[in-house]
Amino acid sequence: MKTALISLVRLYQTYISPLFPASCRYRPTCSNYMIEAIEKHGFKGVLMGLARILRCHPFVQGGKDPVPDHFSFRRNRKESSKE
Image (cartoon, rainbow, N blue to C red; front, side, top):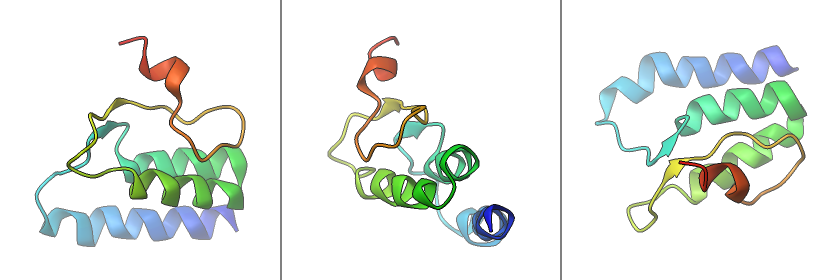
């Protein structure tokens, strides 16, 4: 299941993402975050990735936001403040 979900994200990265200008406000990018979250948390990682995509918009500062070790929909504040 993880492999299939990650393959869908990789298809997006290869064929859809290049059609648009880079606009992700976070590091790692939202699609890479989704892949890491799926690898760490399985299907819950998809939900984490979707929450990340919803908070990636022009009105947010962005910055470093790694995948947390525990399941959460919120930004990883402890890590993002270490910049």
